[in-house]
Each structure stands twice: as structure tokens, then as C-alpha cells.
Length: 139
Image (tube, rainbow, N blue to C red; front, side):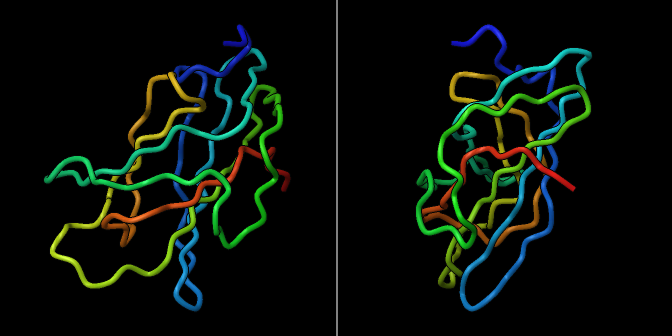
């Protein structure tokens, strides 16, 4: 592991609004470096899905996959203090299900880091969710 990798204590995670179009969904997830020093993200976030009352959902994560936005591919992103990086989660509109949809995302900057829980309004009940690599967010 790179000693400069962003830790959960350095990152603040937020979920945007779900965008829906023609049977697909997209949800931007952002991390902001809230530390006093730069840190590094590389590749794809570690993401899991859950419901606040019923627990974890069985969701397969596909890096890149069929997302509705272009995946920049795994590359090194250095976040200076106050800078943000974004990943986009993409999935197809699910069929009717008795499973409660995910209302929580469990997100870490990289595999092996401690995940943070963030609330999100999704209709994810299982299946496959594609995830783009981290990209520096520019305004």
C-alpha cells in the first residue's frame, strides 16, 4: 500500500442525486480531502450496499462495466487539501423486488481501507452495479 494513500480519516464521503434515463441509473459519489496534507487515490473505490433496517445487500460490483459515463480507468489521483474526486455508480432499472432497496453506501477510497457509511436514495436491490475509477473533480 502506498504510504500516501488517503485514509478514511482524511476523506469525507458524499453521495449525489440519482440520475435516471432510459432504464439506467447513475449516482455520483464524491470524496473530499479534509486533511491538511495531500493524499492519493488510485483505481477504484471499495463499495458495498446496505439497507438501514435489513442489512447488507447481495450486489456484484463491476469495475468499469456498463456505466452510463465513461470510465477513466485506473490511474493515480493526488488530492490536495480541499480537492474532490468522484466515482460514478451505474446500474439498470431493477425488476420489482420484495427486497428493500439500498439506502446506505459503504465506501472506502481503496480496497482494504475502512469504509464510511453514507445515505443514498437508490432503487438498488441486488444484481450488478458498475463503478468508475476515481477521477479528480474539476468545477
